Length: 108
Image 1: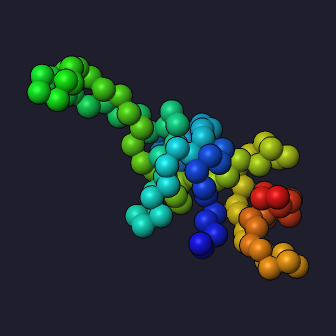
Image 2 (image 1 turned 120 degrees about the vertical axis):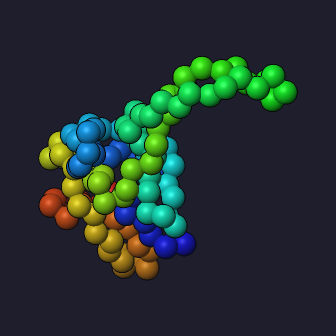
């Protein structure tokens, strides 16, 4: 498994777009397209028609759309801001992520 800089469950800060500065938890990662879905960020409305055969009711459905991974940064609790991530190999051979500003390891 390749080490990803942003993973599911991480708390991230949005760097660009209409949700700039907001924080949220990563719900989904699409590594192939380089996109992430963040909770409460990039919320879009979709008007759906009711379908009795499928049992769905119509109306306006709000859901989170994906954001490009370059537009989010991992939240650093020490500095209180978004931070860049590096990948380092430990002595025992496992790869861990670390914050570039504080040199603090993210994964234990």
